[in-house]
Figure 1: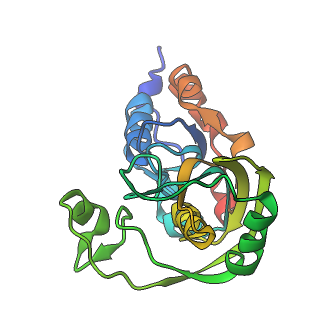
Figure 2: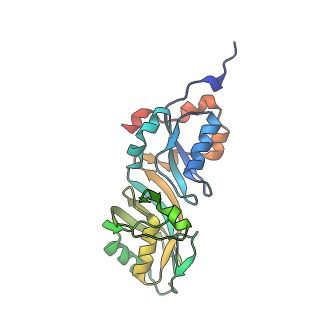
Figure 3: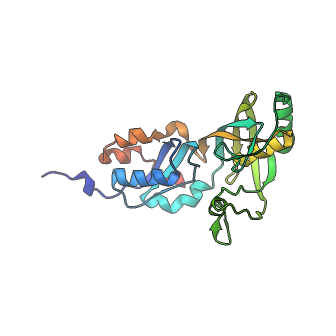
Length: 240
């Protein structure tokens, strides 16, 4: 008697995916659901389409713990580009201001970070965020050219380290709480330096207890037989 692996019940657990640029977190959820013919799939924290790195995909009963996964602290690697502010605070937006950053030194950049951008700080969420005002996500308003008043939100930056200084681009690593907008950090640092700035690239390398080093690429998943999916899932116990 032949055994139809497609008739196997859905497994339960957490699948760590290394998301490529150019796809949304929801795209990855849909792809995993279709590839493995699953009923219940979600994710534990959105990444912007152009961002890469760790995306926790929740399968089966793990979808019930999405808020717990989203609530973990985060670590990102990114690129701060000085000299231009943009409408979206990243490289996808239109330039809205800025000036020649050639006079900015590493010492000046690190001094601003130490004094103003570590520890507790208030951020005004960008208009391209998913936060809802009056029941409508801000990014939908932004697409219509609308802008509304947003209340500042308290976040905590544990550390923000410049790994490679350059003009206009500097590479950094930031460790922060859930809800921290790295694009807003870059925008505000640029403003503090007087030359403008934005986020040019972003990669999430850690979320809570999960690390990108344990993640699998979408290409590798496409080659994985459904019967072997369970071997790639972290058990529900990791969500305790």
